[in-house]
Length: 273
Image (cartoon, rainbow, N blue to C red; front, side, top):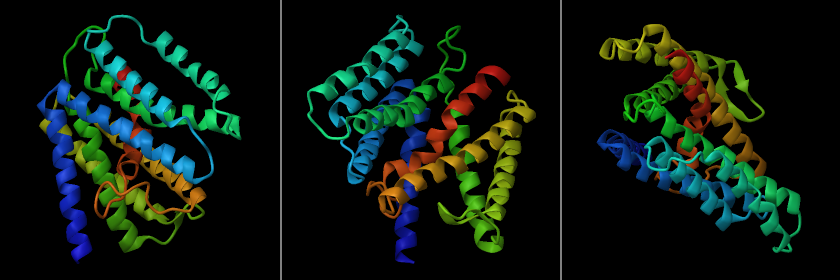
């Protein structure tokens, strides 16, 4: 009971800070998400190091932070140059730096360094485009879309847990996550659809079919995001990615679903909204 209370309080505080920063404005959003992106990438590199790989941690964190900052400044209209060429140039620095490290398994070191940036930083950077959905035509900050992601993922997770505990019999992916069930997945999907309908009533400017697709995409990507992180942790032999939140593990444990949802949410918003 004490552990459940600790987990509930820390989770509530975390959600409050997250939603508060997003609602306060674009700069508070960028500050929080920029800090989170670097800390989560750092967690990922620590996991990789525990598996015997030697990623270029400092360089990776620098490149990752710079990519997020440049993306945000670009959608705000402050940094007007196209940042894609800069991103590609930064990527090619990694092999050059590996030449001077004299480490074993150079190919793995470079691959993990770059994959960490793709896995963590690119999704966070895409959320810059989610909160500025009319870019490049308008610099209007629209935090509702990101808040929808949070609530739909939390609804899915809650439904998946409740239905999984109550009715779960058929394993979803037993090799990676023995406790996940198909019943839990469909229960989570159902609850996220309920939330999507409620959101549509509160914000009728977002069409019902859009919100239902939103909830479906978030449910699917949330599941795969959690499974992929579980696969990484199982390969290393650890339970949590860190100890950031009491009772919740590390930041990567909290953001695994949000990371995986990013590219698909972006595509949905920019092609079907």
